[in-house]
Each structure stands twice: as structure tokens, then as C-alpha cells.
Length: 164
Image (cartoon, rainbow, N blue to C red; front, top):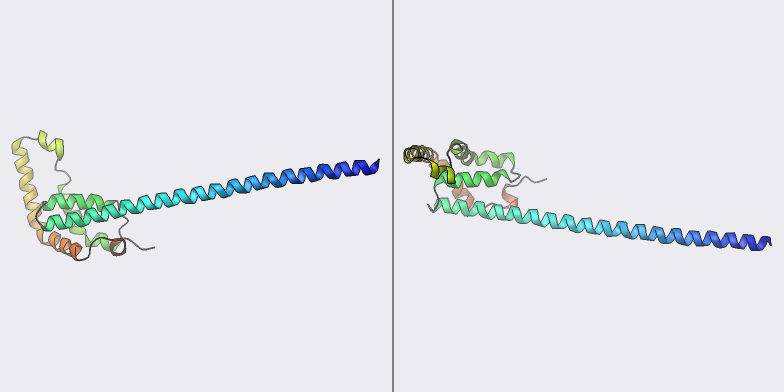
């Protein structure tokens, strides 16, 4: 009789061990699947971030060339570049180098654009145009010098982003 009770208890313990083992296998499999999914998600986010930065770099290079080819006025090119560069983790050295671009941007921030520009009276538009002309004239040399440098050494990860 005792053999039967001991055998039954051993059988119950073995069944519990098998159940526990399978449960742990499921937990480990779920953790592994979760880890793989997170790595894939991180890789997707990293790729999207890199594509965004590449697009910004390409846009900055196009703006620099357009500005040098007189396809866009200095104020507009500087405004567009400053806004794009604000979304990049530029090194302090790069920010300092592009200071004239940011100066033009800061000097023209108060000037209305798009619909607000269209809503202005012609006299107000002329006054702002004169102000833009004065700013562009005073910053022409430094801005063109920077754009020439960008044309010679286009924006890229190695050239302008802070390395960690």
C-alpha cells in the first residue's frame, strides 16, 4: 500500500515538474519574441530617423545650391536652413559656423509670411521688402561664403553632426 502512495506522489511531482517546465518554456519563448519585436521596432525607428536626417541633409544642400544660383533669395534660404538645422543635433562648432544663417533668420522672424503677408497692405509689404533688402545686403558676403563651403563640403553625418 505504501508503495502505491509513494508511486502516486512521485507521479504527481513528475507531472508538476513537466507542467512547470512547459510553463517556463512558454515564458522564455514569450520573452524572446518580445525582445525580437522590440529590436525590430527599434531598428524601424532608427531607420526612419536616419531617413529623416538624410532628407534634411539633402534639403540643406539643395537650399545652399539654390541660394548660390540665385534661385531663392537670401532671407528665404536662411529661414529655411535655420528651421531645418534646428531639428538636427548640430555640434556647437557647427552652430557657430552657421551663425550668419541664424542671424538672418532671427532678424526676419517678425516679418509675416504666407496668408499674413497677403493680408498686409501694399505699403506694409513695401516696408518689409525694404527691410529684407537691407538685411540681405548686409549679410550677403557671410551667407554666400557659408553656402560656398556647404557646396564644397555638403551636409552629411560625418561633417556636421556631433559624434558620440
